[in-house]
Amino acid sequence: METILTWSYAVLEITPARWQLMAKLPPELLTRPSAAGEWSALDCLQHLVDTERWVFPQRVDAILAGQDFPAFDPDSQGQKPDIGPSPAALVEEFSRLRAISLTAFQKITAADLDRQARHQELGLVTMSELLHHWAGHDLMHTVQAEQALMQPFIQGCGPWQNSYRDHIK
Image 1: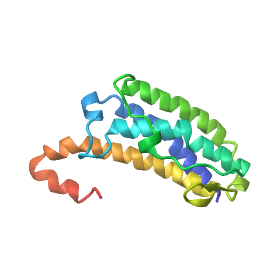
Image 2: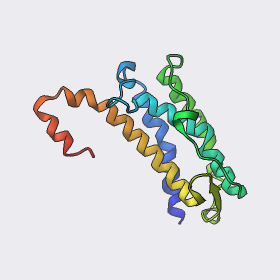
Image 3: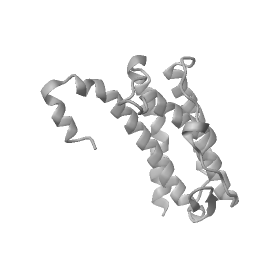
Image 4: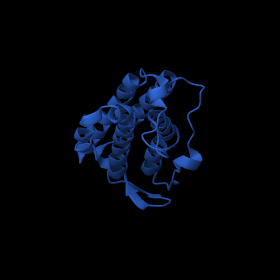
């Protein structure tokens, strides 16, 4: 059970560094969705900032306190990236928020992993399940962003396009 503490902390710790690299890309590439109706890399980053600010740390606190917590709808509760902050500034905000979260994360012990609280839509969830979800959520949206970044390159590579389809699911 302690493995989830080690693994999830490692993923959560490294995610901001991955985004620092992506933030150096041209804004036109970062704001390009992979397909109509899909999120761009910048949308994914904004979502990670939103969930770092309003979702995951609060859920950890709620489970530790044995308190119920609400669902989060990114479409109605999340912010949309605007022209204001640069991608680099958004990454810095994410990094700042994540550093605070990691400090709080270090207080979670193996004994806390079975603690439960009620999620508004999902019912009872454990701390262990939340940590799995948090790390998986980071990875999912970072990969989603990278897939959006890949699309113009895939579309322009002619006969090599099929080699990408075989590796991306």
